Amino acid sequence: MELRERKTQATLKEKITDHYRNRDFSPQKKDVGKLGVMFFWGMTISLFFEAQFVLIPYLYSGWHMIGMILLAFFTLFGTFINWMGMFTGSTGNVDKDSMKKHFPDATETPKGWKFCPTCQVDAPPRSFHCSHCNACILKRDHHCFFSNSCIGFYNQRFFILYIVYMVWGNIWALYLQITYLSEVYPLDSYFELFSFFPAVTIVQFLLGKLAMLNAILMIHIALCAICLCAALFFLFFETILMFKGMTSYESQRTGPIYDQGILNNIRSVFGPVKTIPLQIICPLFPVDQQNDGCIWENTRIKSH
Ligand SMILES: [Zn+2]
Ligand SMILES: [Zn+2]
Image (cartoon, rainbow, N blue to C red; front, side, top):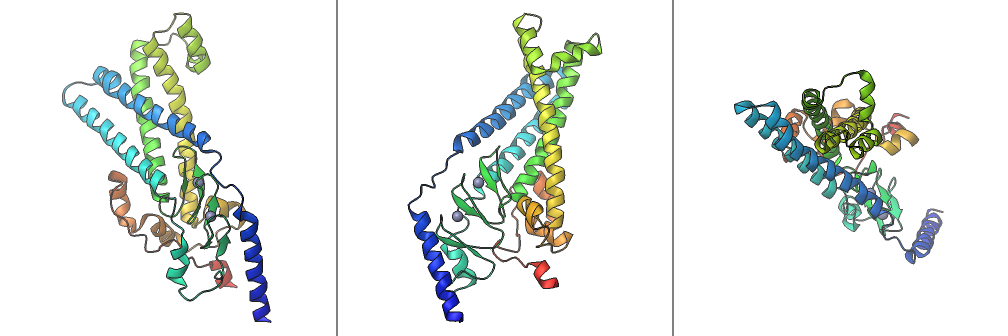
């Protein structure tokens, strides 16, 4: 009976393999992802230069100015490192060795694992194939629009810190922009707040009622406000998911079935909790996640 089941499973696997072998799985939507990358870097670089050459020199002087310039470099550095961590940390982390490492004698797909017909590998629990990255991603959370890469086991901490930098960067940028603009372009009435809608800003600029620098600043303010709202939402959502030990997919389908308690859940993302402040200051800080992302205990099965 057992032999017959194994044979049926193997045949099914072969059928699936044959079915998918000749299909084209090359990434289809990379260009959409590139738009997100271009938007992110366009905003980041333009905000950096705006702060360095317009806002900070106007608002500060002496040592205060030098301190603020260094703070801008620190913010850019942290954003860049976390973005690079997101960009490089997910693809290619499930391969044929993943199963051999944990089940050296296995001839069939281990229990809880699943065979990916595209990658032709047995993939661990919580991993999913991403058609954009064309790879199976360990503990896949989602495909990120701003880095055009998947967020998973190895780069979730960079993603969360990246959002922390987004929240900080946008709040600081808004503070500098609004302080500057309130001095060089004071509003006569609340009605003039309509000027901050990008379409109205552009029309006013084209009509010659707004200097180019002020128009750029006002568009930046609108975009920063939108980015800040999005970053706050993602920070809240991702923190809750991390505390519960869930991925976005699991939050919609299965619930917290790999919940190991809040501290262990945080450790599996950031490593030792006491290193988190150091990771915020220097994202290059080495991390030991105490797991390789392949073995997950299904706590729901255990409790029954
Ligand atoms: Zn795959
Ligand atoms: Zn992806």
